[in-house]
Image: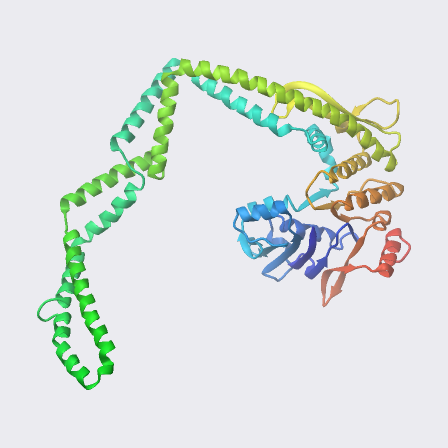
Amino acid sequence: MLKYLRIQDMILIESLQIPFEAGFNVLSGETGSGKSALMTALALILGKRAESNILRKGVTKGKVEGIFDTSPTVSKMLDEYGITSSDELIIRREIFNSGKSRAFINDQPVTLTLLKQIGEYLVKFVGQHANQQLLSIDTHRELLDRYGESAVEPFSNCFHELCNLEKKLKSLQQNEATKQKEIEICRLEIEEITSIDCKTNEDDHLFAEYTILTQAEEFQEKCHELTQALSGDTSITSHLNGLKHTFEELLKIDPSLNEHYQTYQQSIIELQEISHVLTRSMTSHEYCPSRLSQVNDRLSELHKLKRKYGKTLDDVMAYCEEQKEHLDHLENGDLHIEALEKEILKKKKECDTHAKKLTAERQKAAQHLESEIMHHFKALNMSRAQFHVTLIPSPRTQFGDEKIEFFMSPNIGEKRVSVTECASGGELARLMLSFQVLLAGKEEIPCIVFDEIDANIGGTTAVSVGAKLKEIGSKHQVLCITHFPQVASQADFHLQISKEEIDGRTLTLVQTLDDELRKRELERMHGLVPL
């Protein structure tokens, strides 16, 4: 759940720290007081794109930070991306007046893509326009499947596998002229790659050798200079050896210097060893024009391959294997066609099995859904309304063998009409709210935000809406923006949003209401106290 929201220098907000509680949280306030600004800020830490005009006038940077409880699912996702997780999840978004932004999870920088992925498991927004989704029958299918937890995925996976097999079959059945030309191209490409016979990382090794060969003369000169200084009659080691007798005479006077004498001798030995190593290196790094030419030619060949077939030699070799497989398919097309046809037939039977199971699950779920929706309708002052779920057989798609469509009739005995055509704003709002209650126990998302979900309903119905939101709040954290006192009075936790002019600037303020302040706010919402 969302525990805390901090907002700084955004829109009309200078600095806000807003606590939230488990259960049903309500946010109330006059129109224009800044409720939508809070929702915008929350959306920003969940991955929404930011605009520079959301910053307060005169500032260069705004910041939003949210603190959430961490779920096992989110912790697992964080681990996969190497982000340290704990009991709390801290998401921060920084917005700059240049239009750029930065995102952080637990103080580690992340992409907006990851932020969106994480956000989908933290908060779900249900706005006043979410009801319009019910005007699409695709939404009808999604809602039924979520309610019934239907086995859509096994069927969809099988359907996509079948489509891929049929695509392969169609490719093999191409005309002979195209096939022969493709065979010729495949053979030429395979021959070009195999004739060069490249190895993994061969270009890296050759480039290292090329670097050494091109600098061999300089290497020889430096080594010669060092060996001359380290060995020979006038070298450092020769001079140090000549001074050994002097050191030995010194030991006779002060034996305590013996340890340093041993170090002195060891230094001479190590310098002699360095001289030997450099001498051997001169031999192994001899300048060889013929070898340099060979390496250069080979690198050119490998570069040509990479330019044509892949960024790396591994990519080139992988491409070669793919072309060999493709050539085999082309040259033995008839055999492959026969095998594919058998595989397609088998996959179609598998799809049929999954499709029948999916249809049966949907039929069963539809019966229960009709009953439960009408039960909620009664509580929402729509006791005469009828709700029906219709499965319409249709050509098979990735979603099954039927279309799903919701129908309603406002009163008993009236004709059923599709929800996409007849439902009023109030009916859509109550239908969507009913679904939110039904799905609350089936979804893992801990926090649901309702932004004026109670729009388009009457005052009496608002009491029932508040009860439904409180019911959802028993399973999820609910944040609800409302203008209805009938809804707000049923909340577990009440926040008031207001505007004040301070030092010539208008600022949004948020106040946690105790019992007395809440009573006054509910009276204001009822219109019983002056604005």
